[in-house]
Image 1 (cartoon, rainbow, N blue to C red):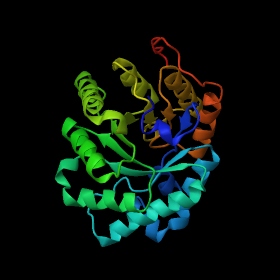
Image 2: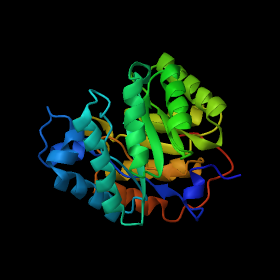
Image 3: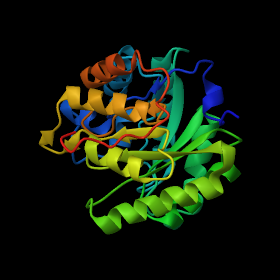
Image 4: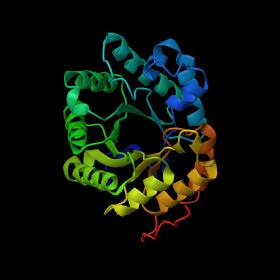
Length: 281
């Protein structure tokens, strides 16, 4: 049976996700000390440019520029969230889906503000909701609860992420993933994002009972990103091991996405087996 997310696409091929928004906005001149969500109101051309470039690279899902919107919700930020959906929708041009994206750390502390933001995204017509960077099981529980209560039946993706990459960190991520699978049902997809780079994301994915089908790693530590071809190798490896929705987080440019898309072009179906990840990946 298809998941709710699968039903958004009438093909069986891998789905390329978009790349980084914040790091691209900074590259284009948005001040690093200012909240990136406010660029939707104060520099919409920059936001539109990033979306346009990701779409031109082949991205089939565009995440709204709303990752940090919960850090101080007021009427202005709510309008910025609504505008973010409109900007992504314009760039999608009917050829890509739009995901309402939220940072999912400390969700339990946001209460009614979280409900207001999700309601605004849903009212503006997002196709799905994406909760990124879950650091605790409680964050994942709240994300699932909000998706079920406020999401109007839309597909949702709840993403875990690593922090220091240690044994306990990986154990925590696997526990979060297990909870999402147990509680999420057909509406909620398991995801991984950032994870300090593609190698760690793939290793964590491979250590779970079932590889998450949504994986969106960063290009690595700030100032020391992996080569685009490493991201392309990751995309192919992730697809062969069962992932379907594949893109990039922090540091991923449109050029990176283009290279990843090329690697995915001829990989329609994953392998049945789960070979080990090479040590030098």
